[in-house]
Image (cartoon, rainbow, N blue to C red; front, side, top):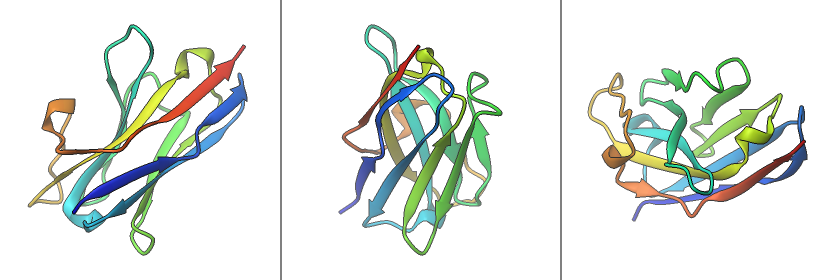
Length: 126
């Protein structure tokens, strides 16, 4: 049974940093696309950053240069390092995953993901 559990959210001032973790069980990271999404009140869910089975990373333009996604295969955990945070980064952040046969496969839409975590709140104060 696949489970994704996020942690690391919190309250931080603008310009600060947070690191989110997504602990995965029931899957092998190299055989999954794992992606962070976020949703702010009144907004649609949006893709933030993702990592393919082959470890290629993809980022939304709004976070490029500030956020870094990585994974630790031994710990079966995906991380999202968020630096230079802005108030507009405030949202609930979700970890999502979907299996892949090919390491290069990338899923750009939320409906392509089969598994979701419960979310972790990130609040950035100005």
